[in-house]
Length: 119
Image (cartoon, rainbow, N blue to C red; front, side):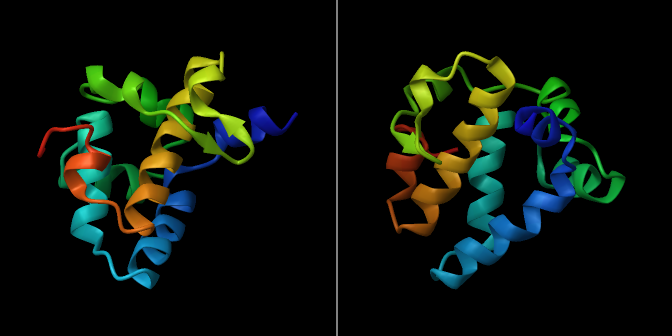
């Protein structure tokens, strides 16, 4: 099943694609870190460790220092699915991250992406 493959996928395999996507649209890796940090609570060192250690997405989210309580405010469509309607908690978190990266790449203001907060 595709969701099993996604669960096992290494964060380090996804991360470079996020970097490429946002940089191609004129955003920075620092902004990407800010978005992922807002969602998960990881700091830059923690993100770098997750990439280097080949941590799977399931572990990445299970060990997230502090999922943002405002993450539930992330709504919209990603990969053809409404984020707020995804029942599986891990898949919802993965799609939240995808949605935030999409918004960053599309040029949204950081306060909008971070749902009103600045960090």
